[in-house]
Image 1 (tube, rainbow, N blue to C red):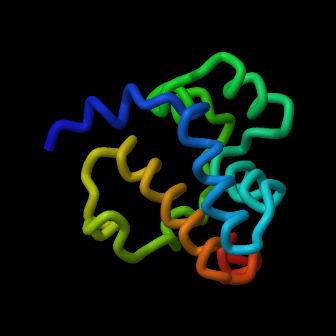
Image 2: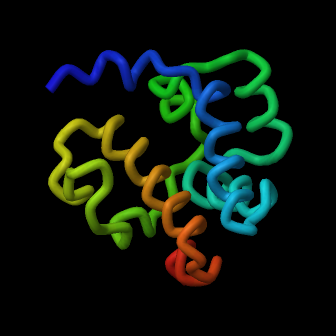
Image 3: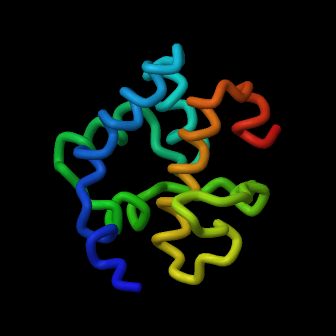
Length: 116
């Protein structure tokens, strides 16, 4: 599979879609941000800088301060692929984020989404 498209996709372009998906289901931008902070270690200032600089997903995850150690608890299927079986590390990280946003939109509690 050619993952070049995912690598070059702008995080700033996808971020509003994450928010829209959450808000359509009665969730908030703050909850989306909390998920991103939990997963990547970004904070509000560094996340905004990333958005302002239109960083692509490859650099978004390369520059992430600290991937949460509990990401191994994220499992299931997203976009037809089992997350645990994705070999490309970057694609797996993007799919982790997709999965967490999906769980938010489906009404899961933040405690369960953040694997507490």
